[in-house]
Image (cartoon, rainbow, N blue to C red):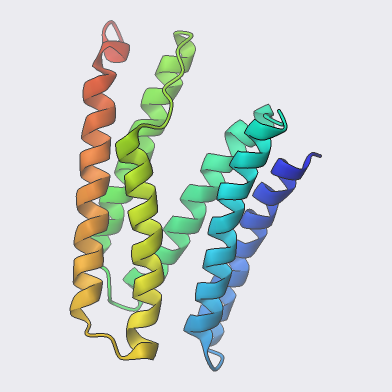
Length: 178
């Protein structure tokens, strides 16, 4: 297994560690969870760079890297829903967009076409990661709870925008789909 794939697996392993820290409620849990979330997020950047730079792109990486990203973000958002700082419908918007874009990519792949990550998808990912980090700090730092509401709005709006953009730019992929 190459270095890029190992980093992807590390991200997958860090997801339950992230949740266990939060659920156990150990002193400084949010800080520890934040550190774990940041470490997992950094592995995403590193594995992509390593895979491209050292030509370590594999089918495993193509499949597991986006799955690991979605699982990490979903795990964090599930925590926020559970503790009442994110409404369930906001998480549903994120999940529906992810399934929709993944489905669109599968249909495109079946037609021999690759739909690469677009600019809006990258903005969505970056803003979601930043918002999750901020939301983990609201309570321990005494930041006004309105920050959670703003973060949820940013996550939902960038998610909807990028999803609509993916479908508009690639609507031809769906022509003739039965």
